[in-house]
Length: 227
Image: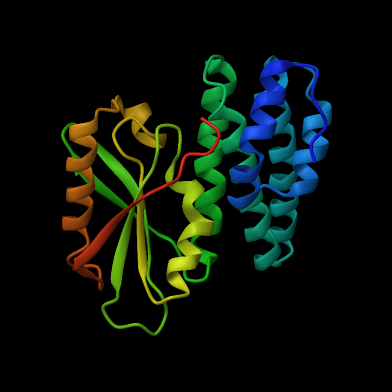
C-alpha cells in the first residue's frame, strides 16, 4: 500500500493512477522509489524522467552488447516512465515536450522486437497523419483486428500490455494516436469527438491491405483509471 504523500496532488495521483501505471508497464519498484524522490507536484515529470533515463541508459548498453531482449525491455520501461511523467503534467511544456518525444523514441526502438512486432503506420486525416502500430499474431491467416481508441491523455505506446491479451487469442491489434493525442498534438491535431471517430474509421480502412480481416474489426476504448 502506498503511504500518504505530503503533497495532496501527488498523493491523489499516486493512489488513483498506481493500478493503471503498473498494468501498463511501470515497475512497482520504480513507482515506490520515484514517488519517494518527489517532494511536490512540480517534481513529478522531472523525477519520472530521471527514472526513465536510467532505463534508457541500460537499454543502450544492452543494445551495444548485443543483448536485444534486455534492451527492448528496458526501452519499453523507459517509454512508460516518460509517458506517465509527462501525460499527467502538461503545465510545464519545457518538461512535457522532451518527455513526450522520448516516449515515442524509446517505444520505437523496442517495437520491431516485440512478440509479435509492432509495425508503424501513418493514417492520413485532414491536414495531418495519425501514427499507429499494427501487431499481427504469428501463424494466424487474416486474423480479426481490434482498433484501440485511447482516452484523453492516453497514447498508442500505452496500449502494449492490453494488446498482448488480444494477440495471445489470435486477434491483431491496431493502436493509433487520434486527433490531438500523442504525436498528432505536435502536428496541430485537436481532440474533437466526431473527427476522432472518423479517424477510427480511416484507421480501419487503412487495414484492408495489411493482412488482417478489416471487415471484422472492432473498436476498443482504453479504460480511464483515476480521472
